[in-house]
Image (cartoon, rainbow, N blue to C red; front, top):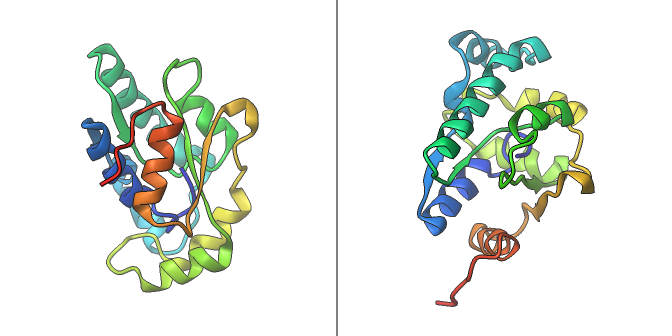
Length: 164
């Protein structure tokens, strides 16, 4: 979880590979209407986000029913959103990719071909409610190398990390 440009997709793909499990891109669960709003610089409302969050939660539940593990990206900026995604689901963990507005703004400026314009970053930081200790997040600083972040997450999950 984290704001646009925090590295969710990069880290999630690497983490899923390290864990040898499924990966889902949360942005793929957005409706065409949501994508269009964002493309035009209109922040999504809670009502816009609810069906999106429910679709992601259903994917998590499908993995759990099948006894599978997986990694899914989602901005999950507010506590109420994370309650939908994690709720009472034991074994579901948040990885919060934390970065300053300046660092993220620089990343977004160099990103090409994404529907989320840099202009919406301000609204994302305004909506961001960093996870509290009671949410048991794994927090990683986005300034670190992606491989180092994945290693940090693996250690926090109790997975063995072998040095190469």
